[in-house]
Image (tube, rainbow, N blue to C red; front, side):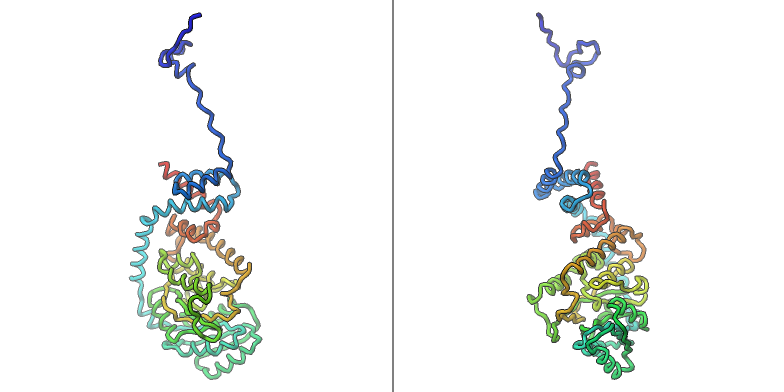
Length: 411
């Protein structure tokens, strides 16, 4: 029998008129390999991320995210890291123009006339600080720039605080207004005091802390004089007897001091407040009565009412930062600053989840420099990821960013 050899470029013998290699001699395509199991693909994607192959890691981790529903932290965190790695390479170009415009706006907004005319009310929410309340009130009276008034409300103290406050108020009738009632909590007490105040600017003094003698001068100049509607300062930390707490004694104090030092490293002061509560306490705040009314005061949180106020306020107006220790924050064992356990963590989580949801939906009104996607675009998500808040962004945000980046890379 004779074997007929057909070259692959010859016409196919079937009579189709097509070359053999494209007809009967076509080599079937190899079947696509089955996808890797998600857990294997995840480990491979993490390894690629660690080796610096961010683009390959992004594609692989995004495919894993599409297959693992709902999205688990074990997948979300490396995917967010891959997203941040690629966004960070674009960030300098996207952020520089914003930052320069922001700095120019700060220089242009100074308002010395507002500072000269500012009328400041000091409000003091008091609760069971008999050992410290007289020192606190004395620090409010002995200011280089006198307050219009000092409004004190005792929130159900049972340690003799009302009697001490009443005696102090009697000695300073022209300066101090005092009321005592049952306990309702710090936020309600601050709100009540502010709403009864006559000043157009408000300085809070917690009843266990102290003002430095020039606090009101510093805050009026650094906030009202800067053309801001609100702001906050650094603070010094003191112990139960009023002595300064040196570095190395308290890890929490050292951490907060380090946070003060990082305020100027963020795109804006507002972005710094999203990354953490650099304002520390309600006593560090200084704000206009108008701003207080716009955000509807303090909400009923036990541990984070000050941070909640700041995060809502930053959507309305960009804060000013006064980098001076013009407030003395006292640590004495009962501070919420030192609180542990799950309750502070639960409050913080609830606060941040709600705030990121609101920020993502914000329409850009209010503060023109608000840390929101409406103003900052993808930089907002990058800063959230860098702050460890990727899982606090609304569901689908990280996957959407990853998909957008994969499409850009493909283009």
